[in-house]
Image (cartoon, rainbow, N blue to C red):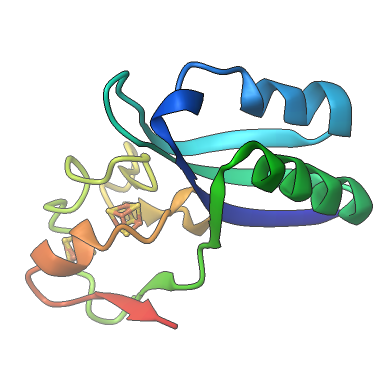
Amino acid sequence: MTSKKIVLHFPQRLVDQPIVYKLVKEFDLQFNILKASVTPQEEGLMVLELVGKKENFDKGVEYLKSCGVKIEPLSKDVVRDEHKCTSCGVCVPVCPTGALSVDTKSRKINFDNKKCIACEICVKICPPRAMEVRF
Ligand code: SF4
Ligand code: SF4
């Protein structure tokens, strides 16, 4: 099984096409949309986590390319320095994917790396600079 996060750039002509749906139907891939900004008049952008057999993953990526979708790997990671984090919560409302959330019992801030799309919003606003970019 392969699991990868990729960034898709759709040209305007493909924005309303069911391209991602075909990844499931024809290549037996599961996907998790981590971020999508698609408007009818502009290029669309989508960050996906794709999961499936490696050969299917490769075929799916080739299919996307053949449709005219530009693909980039999500090659950086955002990590948290647990010693610096004060659980102040400033990062929670700005995180677009819910990767940062409040633990209702302990009131600590949870960081779910699997949901993180490395947008770096939290990196810029974290007061003690606990969130860091790793390449
Ligand atoms: S903003 Fe920084 S210090 Fe505050 S909870 Fe988020 S990671 Fe922790
Ligand atoms: S970089 Fe920060 S704000 Fe962006 S998705 Fe990851 S945890 Fe959320």
